[in-house]
Image (cartoon, rainbow, N blue to C red; front, side, top):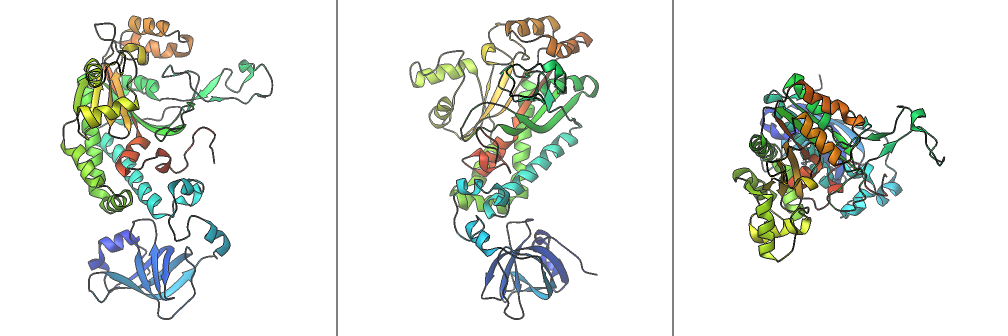
Length: 449
């Protein structure tokens, strides 16, 4: 019987497999002197060497299956496979290969994006994808251990959960017509791609107590920056009997758990990214994990910024990237996340609970160095009349979210939640400068390739 193992498992358990017959499947990454093959199967950044009995002509990039015996090299530390038989699958179009990003030379990240469908076979992108995969698993793992329920919220709805208005509309009507009668549309009304699963998650906690969602959301913002996508992934959680301080503390523990697991499980990929980015990513991540996050009120942030430079920001305005840089580089001079809380209500969504001052909300953002906001959350407004008043103040369509209001008719239990930008967290962990390089098929304005 021929036993198939991943290259990762073989390398990590080489003493177990030494002098035993094994079967591997993968792709030829390098071929030297027509006798030394380096094979990779995507399970690890490391290749495994295969030494042929005689010289052969084998194309780089070809899919291959090898059955052979695992042996130590002469140095008695590294391993190699002595093949018994080899099977090659298909052929390589050399002309296409030489014009592609798989050619064995340096390619810029922007060039890699032009051939998204081939990026998975590059060393840099496969490293990022392995980290992204493990991060996804650890998110589910964390919530599962905490007895949270994973729910699936709709991708299509007919309201704006954030009140921002920048949504993708979907229709089966003939868009060439000047007037569209949405009553005749597929859903009988105007529909759009979701900007959040939060409202549905809030309805779920009435029966499940604590839930989370993890899925794609869509924003039609024409933002051509290195931190924005039109389609991206969000982790959103809602939990009963949590007030603001409790959800803030929970979110900090959540992030630290994820970073600790990534360091433990992905050290080889992180070491590669260290060299690729010429920076000690592991030290940066350890710094996040080991230190208490900075926590400060919005009002005090405004004071500190204006003390640093007069009139740099007006109270009630958004804290922008330029302000974040000042906070990290000059005011706090630390590469530790900053939790800013009690934002003004005029810059926050309708569902956030308002403080007694009637000016600020029980809200918070967690800002990361070089990235900005990764988590945004709040205590939710649980009182029907106050929520209704806020919806009217923001001139929202009450009919469309009447169901959300009705939740407050079944008890006024306080609850809180947050949303985590998954792709931004991957970007921070991998230290990639552009968010388009941490997601398989990035979507942004004027790009859907």
